[in-house]
Amino acid sequence: EHKIKFLAPRQGNYEFDLWVKSNAYVGLDQKQTVKLTSLDPSTLPEFVVHPDDAELDDEPTLFEEMLNANVEEDSDSDDDDSDDDDDNNKKGDGIRELSAAERKKEQLLLARKKAAAAAGDEDSDDDSDVEEVYTDDKKKL
Picture: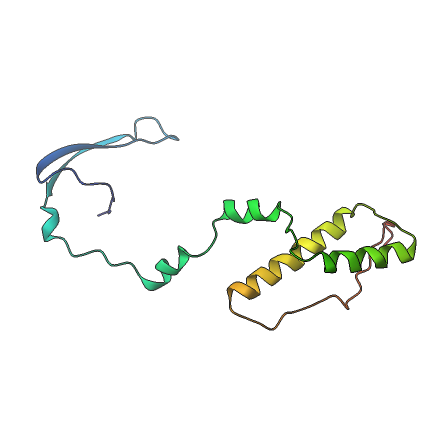
């Protein structure tokens, strides 16, 4: 005995032909006539959404996450930006484009902050004091 879920037709008695076809063997196809009695929808129990499922409506979809990952967050205060620019100018670098690794690091940091804010966690896991080491050399260490 197997259960097949599908949208039931209107109230009444029905006969369906159920075909099971093999894509690997010839002559193994089966046809079975299935009798079905569809009940009035008022006799069914009321559908109740589980609280965990209801909370999922507040979570961003995969599409929304991907869309937000590509959007740079604009800053409302120019003071923060000007401090960063002053530090870069002191080093003599001027304005430069971020490398792919630096962009990824910034995106991950932003995603962590958003996740902490969404979870109500005010304690940030700031990794700004951690130094990341990248090497272009492909020698075994």
